[in-house]
Image 1: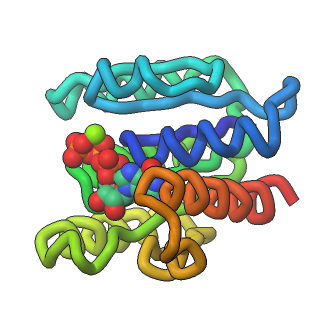
Image 2 (image 1 turned 180 degrees about the horizontal axis):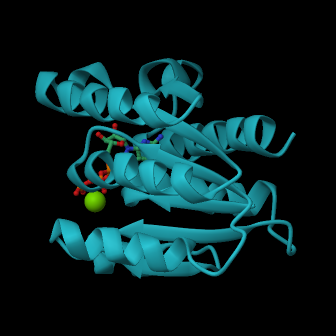
Amino acid sequence: MVVIAIGNGGCNVADSLCRIFPSNGRYRLVMLDTDSEQLGKHKAECEKVVMAGVHADCEAAIDRLLAGGDVGEVAVVVCLGGKAGSRLAPLVVRKASETATCVKCVTVMPFAFEGESRKARAEAALSEIRGCVGEVVVLHNDSLIDNYADCNICDAFLQIDREAANYVVANVFF
Ligand SMILES: Nc1nc2c(ncn2[C@@H]2O[C@H](COP(=O)(O)OP(=O)(O)OP(=O)(O)O)[C@@H](O)[C@H]2O)c(=O)[nH]1
Ligand SMILES: [Mg+2]
């Protein structure tokens, strides 16, 4: 099983995943982002790949990632609405669906307060992802945060990342 976390939010969820369900050889974790500085800050021990802006370079990097014989199952984790995740996740699921035995995707949709353009970017990416993968879990930050209204924003994000990571464990591994 390869878990590919994409964009800063997706990689934050993957950090939580590693805390609640450490790899211990059960899965290979790869983090992808266009932002090398952010990528360097994630605590999980894993492969980290900085994706270049040019489309063809990204495709080549994803091919390298998925090369090497039987990739088996691939799970993609991404928070949609930002530029990196919304651009790269559809690309990754399309490439993975050509080579992997099974591809699953766990997505988190942006808060309504982030505005229409983020929402539109997230929805466009989600519909591309749905075009390539049968199993797509869609979580909503607006619903995830409901239980943490009293927390400060950092604590609330940690909690919702953990909740999203629990969905990854439940839907991807079990
Ligand atoms: N649950 C959760 N959602 C997040 C987190 N960080 C960001 N988000 C959400 O995910 C959306 C995308 O943000 P990022 O993941 O930071 O964006 P990105 O894919 O890195 O893209 P750019 O930085 O714009 O290139 C945001 O609009 C938020 O709704 C996080 O740590 N947890
Ligand atoms: Mg980013």
